[in-house]
Each structure stands twice: as structure tokens, then as C-alpha cells.
Amino acid sequence: MKKALLVFLFVFSQTVFSASKITETEKLATTCKVWGFLKYYHPEVAKGQLNWDSQLLEKLPLIEKAQTKEEFSLILENWIDDLGPVNEIAPIVTPKEVKLFDKNFDLSWFNDKSFSKKLSKKLKFIEENRFQSNEEFGPSFDGFKNLKNYFNLDYTNKNSKLLMLYAYWNVVEYYYPYKYKMDQKWDKTLTEVLPSVVESKTPEDFYKVLRKAAAKLNDTHVEFHIYPSSATAKKSYYYFPATGKVIDGKLVITEILGDSLAEADNIKIGTVITKINDKSIKEIIEEKRDIVSASNDAAFLDKVLRTILVSESEKVNVEFLNDGKYETKSMTWFNYHDSHRNEYKKGAQIKKDKFKLLDNNIGYVNMGVIKPKNVPDMIDALKSTKAIVFDMRNYPNGTFGEIANFLNSEEKEFCIYTYPYPNYPGKYTWEEGRKVGFENKDNYKGKVVVLLNEDSISQSEWTAMCFQTAGNTTIIGSQTAGADGNVFEFDFSGYHTNFSGIGVYYPDGRETQRIGIVPDIEIKPTIKGIQEGKDEVLERALLFIENGK
Image (cartoon, rainbow, N blue to C red; front, side, top):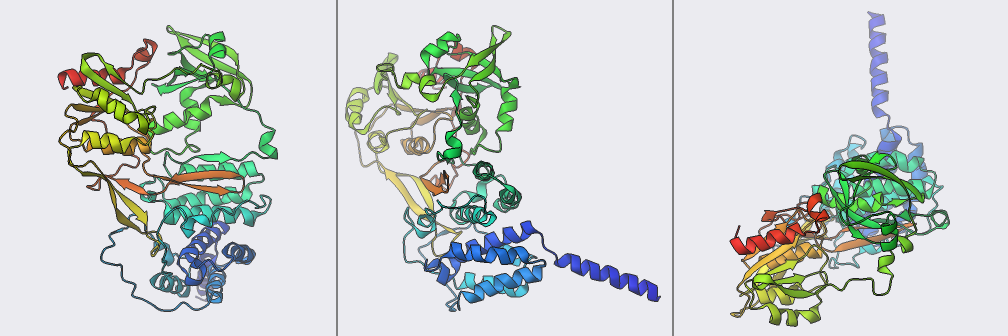
């Protein structure tokens, strides 16, 4: 009996001891959340009067030494106590005119098993008596302007790297409007990247980890650029002299960028590439999945080309498919200037029509070329047509307002927004959107057709929503980039990144992020059509105008 009791006590004590142990990743992930929460919620910290970054760097060595959950919780409790008392002002009532959007809000981690009950209560009390801001949300909002100072961090120092990760993770946690639309929970991304951040040895290693984290935002607006440094300056990059689209797992050339270089290797519009350096295009694409952030697959296939058609070696083996036969060429790729010489050669750019009259009294407007000053002439030239095709497979030049006024007979709202709510970080408010049009009996009476594809992003999508208010608008093409609204940009030590900054929705609340603008008639270019020099999307639009189908 005594022996059985001793065995039981030994097992019980080991279970209790084991249960109180805490891993480094658990400690660092929880510290990230607490530090970010206090940064935006604690009255003394949110005022901006403390060097909050320095405080983190001071506490991290203590946190590293903590072996148990109890020791860890006590460090955080003492840290909060050292900030001074929080005055009880609850209940904080949300003004009646404020309509909250809560899909991004989640403070359920307060009840994390890593916390003591005392620590959980402290965090909850701070939430209920949080800092109340007097400023309006905008580009200069404190949540963003304080991020502009991460330029002198030491990449050989683990805690400096953690500080930068924490700053980035928390601004996304509280101020990314589409966090709820991510494929993977942002909490999980934090725990996944932390070990790699700690283990990273060079700036390049660290950039790769952060780039993978940024890709998890599933936002086509996200870019990740490394600033030139002594390390990156030593690298040379070489480029293919053309670009294209991924169709049926193959890369099809749609635009020549370096004419003489392309001609030397017999590269033309419609040329099909199946492999680069013995890897199929499909294999290369899958390898890039975790470093390219895109709202949907159409946008991903468009963005991934930038990484496929560049090499760190000037000698590249490329497999082509021509008339059913595969041929591998050892190509020489060149620097950006030479491989994109069409951009630099005087007179090489083909002048594109801003607008024109097609056959059968159909107007055509290139929204990527026309500028506000050209709109009055466009309206005068096309107002009597039976239809106008607005080609928005590009990025418009801010012409939406005057054109929309021409299309509409009355004022209409075409979008609404969600903005971060400074008085309750993580929550958003529904805000009045934009309206276009006015009482106009001379508005355009013909059919309105808008052409869209994966190149249609942000202002293109927003403008398409604007034109849809005309009531006689038909969207033709394929899925758009699914990243609407403005962009917030951030500079850290050695790199620059950004993401969509406000939520954009239709007036009835329908989402656009990741979905894009849904076409009424879906049509995509084919390899055969490109090789024959056809614009199949425009042809489909003209067919619709003639037969209504």
C-alpha cells in the first residue's frame, strides 16, 4: 500500500511540475501579445510618454530566465504594476452614432493557460478602463507613425529581432481590417515564425521569415521590399526579356520588354514556357506559395511571375513548347535595364489611345491611359454611342468621378468603409462611404461594359464599383485582385512593407476583399487566342453588346 502511494505521489508531483513548465515559444508569443495590448490599451503606455520598445528589451532577459508559468506570469504582473495605477472609468459606453464592426476583435487569449488568474484579471481591468483617444483615425494615427523608427536594430541580437517582429505582428493584429479573412489565424502565424526569427543569423534570414509572415495576410496589396545594403549590393539579378501570364500551368508570353534580346532567342507574343532550370512552371509556383501574399489565386499567379522571371545567375535553361515539341535553350538573361530596354528606348513606347470609336458605334476607353483632363473630350466624342467599353485591366488615373457623373442620372452611394476604432483597438466602425452622380437628365443612355481581370486592383476595383451604380453596367472578364481601399506603408530596419488599410464593402455590406469584383460574364484569355493576337475579353464584350448575351 505504501509503495502504491509513493508511486502515486511521484507521478502526481511530476504531472504538476510538468504542467507548470513553459516553452520559449509560448513565453515569446504571449509576451508579444501582452506588449502589444499594453501599447494600445494601457493609459500610460498609449499616451506615448514611455519608451515602450526599451521596456520590452529590458524585460526580455528576465522572461528568458523564467522556467515556469508562475514565474513568467509574475514578471508580467510586476511589469504592469510598475506602469502605475489604472483609474477605473468603466463602464465606457460606445456612442450611439458609432456602429461597430467586431469580426477582427479577439482578446480571448486573456484566459491563456500560461497566465495566472491574477494576470488575467489585470489585463481584463485594463481593457475595461482602456486609454481613450481624442484623435481621429488617419495616416498620422499614433498606431502607425510610431512604427517609423525601426532603422538601427542589430540583427545579431535576438531581442532586437523580436522587437521588430512584435511591432509588425501587433499592428496587423489591431489595425489590419481584413484579419478575419486570413486563411490562417494570425496567432498561429506568430508561433510558427518565432523559432525561425530566434534562429536567424543574417538580415537575409530574418527578411525571409518576415516575408513568410506577411504572405499570411492573404492580401494582394502586400509587398515586401528589402532596402539596398552592403550585403544585397553584392548580389546581381538577371531578367527574362518578356513577361506573360500563367495559363493551364504554362507561362505564356504576352508582352516583350527587351525587343532585341527577345528576338535573338525567337521569343514572341504567344511563346510558351514549360520549365525553367529543369523545374516545371507548376513546381516553381508551388515553391513560391509561402512568400507571395495574394488575396486569391488569380492575383497570386499574376504576382508570382515577378519571382519566376528573375534569376541570380545570368545563364538560365528554359524549356519552350512550340507546335507540340519541347525545346530547351541555354539563355543568357541580362540586367534590368537591358532586359527592359523597351521602357528606355526613345520612341519605343507605342502610343495608346485614351479613347476611340470602334465599329458599330461602340466607344472604347482605356482607363489606364485616360486622365481627368481628357474626360470632357471623351464624353463629347462618345456620348451618342450605343455602348461604351471601359477597359480597366490596368490602374486608372483618378477619372472615376467625372465619368460616373456622366453615367448616372442621380446621386448614388457605391461603397462603405470600416475604419479602426482608436478607442477600442481591434474593433472597427462602419463609416459613410462615397457617392457619385447628381440629378442629370443628360446622363449616358447606352450600355456600359467594364473589362476586368487579375491586373485590376484597388482603384480599379473601387472604380468598377463606382461604375456599377449606373444600373446598365455589365462586368466582363475574370476575378480581380481582391484588394480594395488605400494602403498603409511601414518602414523597418532594412525593409519596407504594406497592407490594405481600410475595409471596403458594397453599400449592402457585401465583401470585396479576396473576392474582388465578380464578373457578370466570365472570360479568360487562352493560349491559342494570345498566339493568334486576339483580345478574347474585348471580343466577348463586343459580342454581348450586339446580342445581349
